[in-house]
Image 1 (spheres, rainbow, N blue to C red):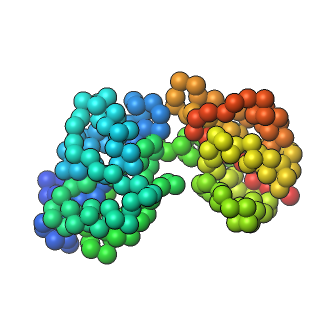
Image 2: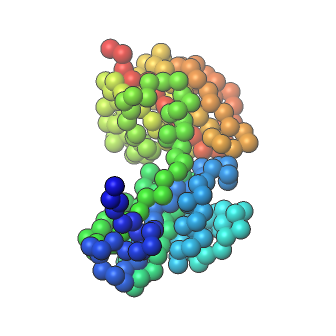
Length: 245
């Protein structure tokens, strides 16, 4: 059986690309527990020329935990327009780059898309190194249907666009996955009761894979009542049952 050359194999660049260009690796990293990283991800992080990180301090802690040390540059929501051309120049000069986010898979609610759009027209190899993502982790333990689902990420903050997105979810029959910050959780739960009704099935997953991991299952109304009595901390993923009407 024939096999296709891969950027990580003995010939680092596929035959269809320029020989002196680098490789961009999209590397998933742990969402909490530092043991949740693949052997392949560790090998790539330990061998690339540069790691482009959302928060270099956070990524340095991950590298140190696993006994790795590589040059780091920042790439995040507030500097992507300036950093993308710089990273592209490195790749064109033959440097290999690993793109990582603070937690999970790059491109899921972070600016990886912008970099990919800058790199793709130049025929530079882009290699996924799969691994954790909070959306999938929450979905798998939610107990809600998983055969069809939709990822909404963070809802818009501005009230007009936010209401539009919530209204669109009223008739959504697929399971819905959302991200939310702790200080906006109660607002979101109140909005879900208002738009989806008090009986829509809901799961709030908090601090997944970390010491204080919690998965709260119930309805929009019961979980609103629960979290109204508590101070909420940590990363949050909500999984909402689809419309049954």
